[in-house]
Image (cartoon, rainbow, N blue to C red; front, side):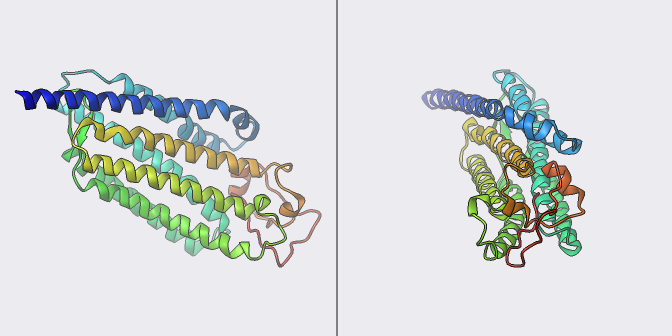
Length: 305
């Protein structure tokens, strides 16, 4: 009797922590949206690339709406197992869609960085499709093997859940290595351009912090589901949503910001390659063309994305 009572108290405490983390993550996403609203209007909503705007809107605002809906479902006890399993499937499916949306932005960055190299482009697309298929298959096994409380909060997950995380991590590591290789090679040729004003430096900076944040968030979320046997296991879910939303939206904003002449110095503009790719125009908001200076052979800043 005492053991059962103690376990019930532990479950209630875990639920409280779960709800507190969920609220904190949602508040953080809302706050970040508010403080960056001016940049959104200036660099994004005044542009003409509709697909980028729709992608940004999904990455930025859908997690907030989704988080509020999931949070409103708390304390709805007495749910049948079938309903809870469908509810968990919805949560994981949304997380997968958000992950794919953010990765699409990262993929396009690499496409433009390598000037639409056909062989590399085919390899990246093949790897991306493989990752998506693996995630879909693995998440189905995760849903079947999860246990949850009567208010549909996931308590434990099967060990195969770590493979779900590894499939996404492997692909994002592949993209990061490609970005690192290209930017590192170009940095030795860009010594005349100040590091903080270099397009390649900004490319590498955004790729590094986005990869690091997503890596840590996914790792912690996976470990919580693997190592914790209480409803506290799901506290990393909201933070993974928040990190993906933050990383994806800020990468898009920084890309669009690169298209503004006052942000780039004339040295940067003069080193950009004159691309015929629509991706540059769509993502950065405008195509920067070298109209006054010829490209220096010692400075190969490839492009912006």
